[in-house]
Image 1 (cartoon, rainbow, N blue to C red):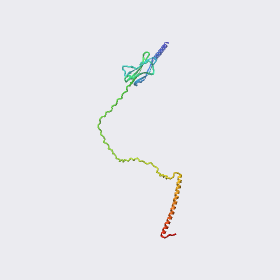
Image 2: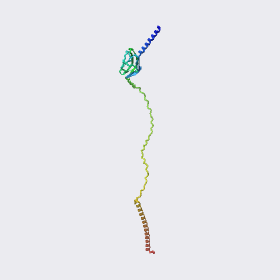
Image 3: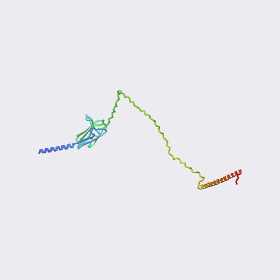
Image 4: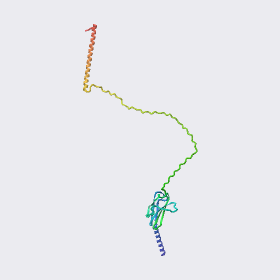
Length: 240
């Protein structure tokens, strides 16, 4: 009976201790920046800080190495609002010289105890390294080298004949051969009636001419007979 009571008491004590441990547990974590990260400017710090006995959390930074254990809080620390996978704070690295630093997250419980979480080897590089000019090699005087004799170049002269540039010739455009169009004769009449009168006059003139021609022919024949007769009379050869 006594043994049973002892076992029950031990179990009750163990449950109480486990309950107290779980009640006192807090959780903290920094997810960004990571170890050996290179940062500049204002760096957001991401992570978590919460738990049943959560009181507050603090974020500090310190140089590496840190033999004097010197830590400087970031702006706003400590924080009293728990964070679950969110922004814990903002680290302004422009206020510190370039170099290697560590971050420390301290989650404080209600009883005053705390847990700490670290990120190591963070490189702050706000000042970009300037490029170092590479010195150009200084030319050194070398021993004179023999210059090879120039190879004679054979030039073949080819006479060129200047071809006269043909001048543009003006090609006459083909033209139609001139046609002699006979001009109409100047007629003495201007209308049909004038033409009829002119034709009648011309016919009359022809007949008159023919009459005159016959008259002249008859007169010429009479004259010849008269001359022949006179000649015969003069010779005494008159015939009745």
